[in-house]
Image 1 (cartoon, helix red, strand yellow):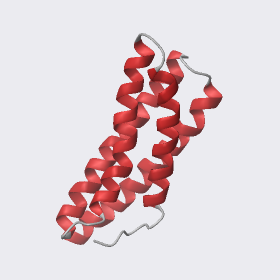
Image 2 (cartoon, helix red, strand yellow):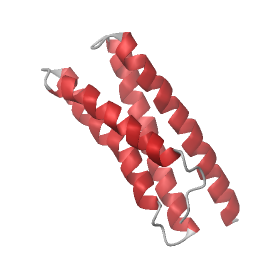
Image 3 (cartoon, rainbow, N blue to C red):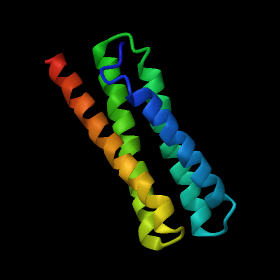
Image 4 (cartoon, rainbow, N blue to C red):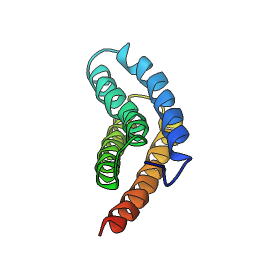
Amino acid sequence: MQNEAPNIVPRTFQFALRIVRLCSQLIESTGVARTIGYQLVKSGIAIGAIIEEVQASPDKPDFARGLTQALKEARLTNYWLRLLVESRVLPDQLLEPLVQESTEIMKVLGAITANTYRGLS
C-alpha cells in the first residue's frame, strides 16, 4: 500500500536511531533509568518498524490498523520521554528535541490515520 505521507518512513527511521542512541546511555545506567530505557527503546523503534511494515499492506483496512498501532507506539514513546524529562534522569536539552519530534510524529500519524479511516467509509 503506498504511503500517503512519504516522509514519515525516513522520519520515523531517523527518530528510531536517535532513540537507540539515547537508550544506550539509559540501559548502561542502574535502577529506574535502565528500566525506562528498555521500555523506551521498545516503543521508540516500534514506530518506524510498524510504518515500514504497513508499506506492504495488501489493503486499506490492514494499512489503517498498522497506522493505528504505530500511533499507539508513538504515544507510548512520548509518555516515556516526558517521564524522563520530569524525573530529571537526563538533561532537558538532550530530551526536549526528542519530546518535540515524538509529538510531531504523533500529529502526522494521527492525521494520516484519520484520513485513511475516512477513506474506508
